[in-house]
Image 1 (tube, rainbow, N blue to C red):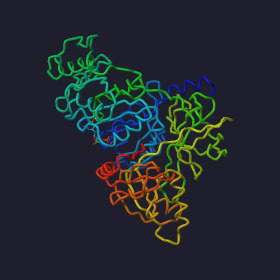
Image 2 (cartoon, protein in one colour):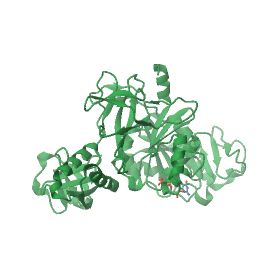
Image 3 (cartoon, rainbow, N blue to C red):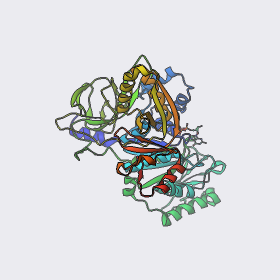
Image 4 (cartoon, rainbow, N blue to C red):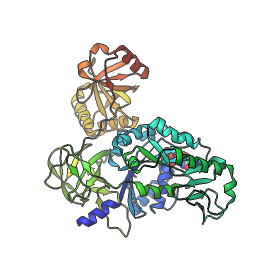
Amino acid sequence: MENKKLDQAVDKRRTFAIISHPDAGKTTITEQLLLYGGIIRKAGSVKARKTGNFAKSDWMAIEKKRGISVTSSVMQFDYGGKRINILDTPGHQDFSEDTYRTLMAVDSAVMVIDSAKGIEPQTKKLFKICKMRGIPIFTFMNKLDRDSRDPMELIAQLEDVLGIEGYPMNWPIGSGKIFKGLYDRYNDRVALYHAKDPEHPYLKLDDDGNLKQSNPIQDDDIYKEAKENMDLIQVAGNQFDRDKIMRGDQTPVFFGSALADFGVQTFLDAYLDFAPQPEEHTTQDDQVVQPDDANFSGFVFKIQANMNPRHRDRIAFVRICSGEFKRGMDVTLERTQRKIRLSNVTEFIANTRENVQTAVAGDIIGLYDTGNFRIGDTIYTGKQNIKFQKLPQFTPELFVKVAAKNVMKQKTFHKGIRQLVEEGAVQLYTSYSTNEYILGAVGQLQFEVFQFRMKNEYHSDIIMKPLGHKIARWIDPDQLDEKMSSSRNILVKDQHNDPLFLFENHFAERWFKDKYPDVKLTAKL
Ligand code: GDP
């Protein structure tokens, strides 16, 4: 691809993930977005697939036809002159470190909040990662067709709980049974929830935010209140600040209902006005790699093992950081300095007639992998060595003790653990007092996958004894005295031999802090 064309192709990319707590409406909104992108025709397909009410073969056929990935890990579509990549952040039982790592591969995030519930735990966790990266975060306050919390309170919660300024782009006129629509200063209009004429769902606003033509709605108290609130915010609330949005210090907030498809398109349009295109990436030795660089580069952010025992292959998900991917191209794997030919590749790209299929910076490709790749690996073309920043280590919350069922088979057990830990499937700790192995994860699924793969790939049967939730806190080795360990915590070392305590609960952690006020405890992300 010529430079100019590559530049144009990269400029069009918008790559994001949706962060939310289970049931906030991520699937429903994703589906609406896919509908706008023309990827699916019927509402319900994504949802039905999730609940298993959809024949698998039908789904596969849709995937093939429409170019949605088999696992729907990445969904790509064209809309409003842009090429959009939505990266799935598995939640529910599928929550794992991969969910976090996916957030390392996006340029912005959409935060979906259930307006009746406000900010929930999983949203908070995922938000933290986005905040750490300093990427723009766009908020959709969902389910306004149901009774929801006071919008003022929802905005305040963003600041109080997450520490991000909220800037309402529109304001709900009532909610639930009395939901009338959105007072939308960004587009200078009122969007009517029950428009008499579906062709004309909008009422225009003048520069002062008043209705241009008289309409019964203006006498409605709920409308008046929404308008007053929006006026008040314009004067006394956070000032709209594009730079802050780009840094992730302010989030534009949109209200709506994903289920009723109300406010979703407004959201999508505004999102595209602000969402960033792929940006430069910095390497470990502080080189800056521009997305329109002619050389290809990318990093592995997730490895998905095939759970079918007959197929051991895995897929390594690569975020392209620069250049263009070409099937069959030779790349250098930085860690080993070996050349690898990329021939067996899944491209998560939209199948549209107008667009030649290409994957460029901002896009994701899935490499079939027989064990070459590890999470965090960099691949590149060209002479210049490129090594992207390490992916962060996340603080696990769930722990199990692990041992080989058959004590005679220690060798395969150790080999399996070593490789799976290196790959990033789980985190490994060793107890100071007993030398036992303890595995840490952010979601239960990681243990299940681990057990399965140990058996399947290393023929190692393992015993896992759940230790439940723990609070992992690292301690400076110089401050450590093994006597600090008590019945309320387990003293372990991590893969890098750094010591940490696994506290039973916050109470145990506080008790420790009171007892050793000079000892500094730290969490990873
Ligand atoms: P996810 O777990 O975040 O993917 O959430 P889903 O999209 O599966 O939605 C969870 C439940 O909330 C489902 O029963 C949806 O039909 C429902 N839901 C999603 N969005 C809305 C909405 O805007 N209004 C209402 N009333 N229900 C919604």
